[in-house]
Amino acid sequence: MSWTKRQFIESAYEEMGYASYIFDLEPEQLERALWRLDSMMATWNAQGIKIGYPLPASPQDSDLDTLTNVPDSANMAIYTALSAILAPTVGKALSQSTAAAAHAGYRVLLQKAAMPREMQVPDTLPLGAGNKTWRVDRDPFATPPHDGLASGAGDDLDFN
Image (cartoon, rainbow, N blue to C red; front, side, top):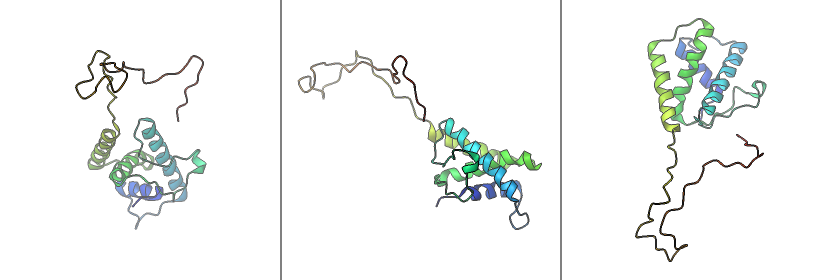
């Protein structure tokens, strides 16, 4: 089941020791925490940790009750990392176990996001016995490596 942004924020405050049955979060606190959550997730997205979190176009477009559609394996990493960001803003010291959980969760997300670079074989490598030369262009060797990124002179590169 997907969590809402509000659930991440409330879990982060609970992680810091603000139990929901004792402390009621003010709307301003929720809004500031939402901005920090969106900023943290945008930073992770820029670092290559793309987990499906819906990033708003501007802070004013973000909604607390939006479903995030992140995998359940990322939930703890998100709310513990958010609690590490929010703790100084409310004058709380983060516990060692929360800091360790935030670090471990972030490392797991980095490991899941890491993709090895595609290996390019040299053009001197024979194709092997299964690749008959009469089936293709009669070249018994692998195709030469190519540049992964090509842009012509004067062309713009678009990063989306």
